Length: 47
Image (cartoon, rainbow, N blue to C red):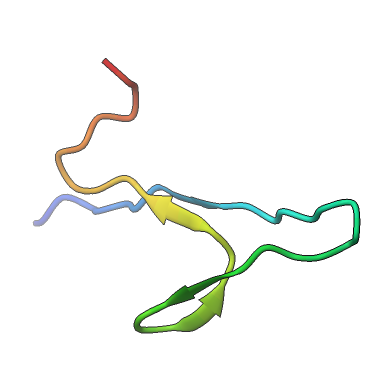
């Protein structure tokens, strides 16, 4: 039996005083909220 694999990710909604929403244009999915995920073997804490 294989070990379950979980992905830890986060995204943010950023709005400025003009009520404008921050988006990034990714190469694969187009416009999206800024965010990311912890890669396999990467630590959750900063050293």
